[in-house]
Image (tube, rainbow, N blue to C red; front, side):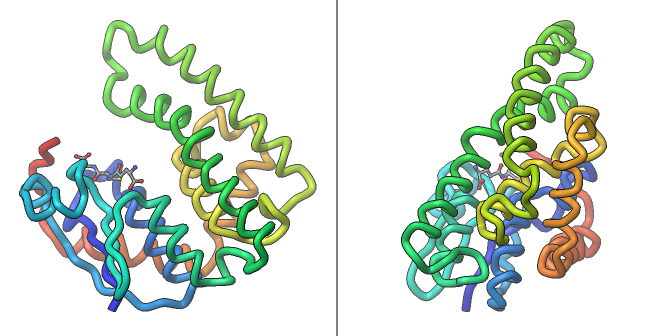
Length: 219
Ligand SMILES: N[C@@H](CCC(=O)N[C@@H](CS)C(=O)NCC(=O)O)C(=O)O
């Protein structure tokens, strides 16, 4: 049985955004059932978890063949076995891989810079100056993705794991002026997150948090 490790609870701002969502979404798109392995913020620091996720994070994924950490690697592993997430031909597979790396390497760090500054450092004396630069860098990357998506529903014309990862990165900016500047990106995020598989994945993550009490989150 496939198993996804996720948190019992996270603070409000993170609910619906914890990265096991990517794995749940991929499994839903692929039509694969999974079990949850739930840990709390004490357990993430314990040796047993660190053997499975060296950075004390979630998600971790396990199936009959492999145990993996890093949401991108996990999504690609699931995509290898599902045409719903990745074309079978080698060119289509390689293009999916390109977009997966683009989402996580060329876009996510810039989006994360903006989000982390907003969420955790808004009152710091350096925040305004830093944010100016972070926003400019993020805007550049968003503009490139928006240009690419003009005239396309999905990055490669059909939904792939690349879209799954790109959409999870971009939805971090929902409601932010940087995303609103690109109606094509807003529409793309809506299109991706309007997929029934995303809805089921989100519901599954949120259901866990609703069922568990708040907890001190240690890094
Ligand atoms: N690059 C990792 C990042 C995973 C990650 O950021 N996990 C967060 C939740 S979304 C976490 O466990 N944070 C707890 C911590 O860092 O202490 C991935 O994509 O799997």
